Length: 521
Image (tube, rainbow, N blue to C red; front, side):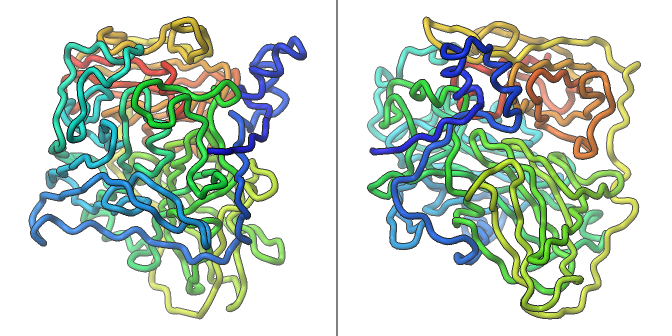
């Protein structure tokens, strides 16, 4: 698979720059702090922006048409993402993104996954408050038919005496005792998460409840889920990815220029390149997910005459804020979700609003567009008070404070990404805490690291000794650490006992060791 690389001054570029200039990786990054990784250049012609209509992933129906059991088949398909180009994909139920699951707070569901792909898979419901057995631990594999145990590589992840391996199918039961919010499900296989997500294994999951629905927020066709992801395309139409083993069967990892993360030169929203969506001149609720492996975005909504529209944030990773927060620029790291309202009522019919990425350049500076097609009545509102059930943890509640460094380093004779100087090892317990304990964690980064905690949400207390940023509001499960930054978070480890993870959600970093075990007793 032929691919062209564009080197950027992220750590991927910095690794090369270090030898040439004598700069440390961190110093090289400081020169371009918004960039992480190296960008692949597509080898096929790219379409003009704002031509493809925005697809809306279908909502998955329960098995048998009713009840709380769902079935998804993981399988290979070919699809036309770029006009006239056929692209092989790994999918949930034959589509990318996978079907959206809609559920109710406190009403358990079971999702049965059947693996018809050529490699093992694992499913993680990102942001779910899920028992450990269904959380998608990376070694809890679902093996495809005919897969032999000895086919699995002997890398740092495969010795795990606690692994629970299934053949062909696995049921994941989610209690959903959590605040209404946008979650997402994706592959979480040991050492191969990044290429599996890149090939298409990602979908949305929305949790709803009566209280949120009573607020009068935009709904129905004026509520849009937006999964943003970058990709690159090879000359044969396939998705270009610099895997050391393109079969994703034996040898994990990527080639040297991409060790810091893989960036694509095509921005997809719900699987379409730079799409456009017709809207009414009214408020819309945008449920935004950054499903990119490594790319960060800074979103801005701009009319054709240069006017910037407010992005009114009403929710974060783990649900509604206490009160709205208004932004003009909204940064979003891999795996973060933001719930925002945009008001198109001041845009004339026929006018266009572009959603831009101020961290991109050239084509990656554009995300999608909205075209105002008609006037319309609008009885939606944005309440001054959104939610009263946010936890109010105080520093004095914390029974302990922990420090974690997230840095590059050496592992197994090669480059890796480490937490506290150690690469991930499933058989090692890194952190033990008690159910119900409140803790403060201090997280320090060398370069960009979006840090995700499984099971729990947290509040951001500070950034480098200063107050949190406006977009840190609310309850989160992923926080973006910037180069050289120290971030304090506070959380309560409640819900379930068992083995969980915390890790960097730059998917290439995750695959190269930047995960750790969290045991809740």
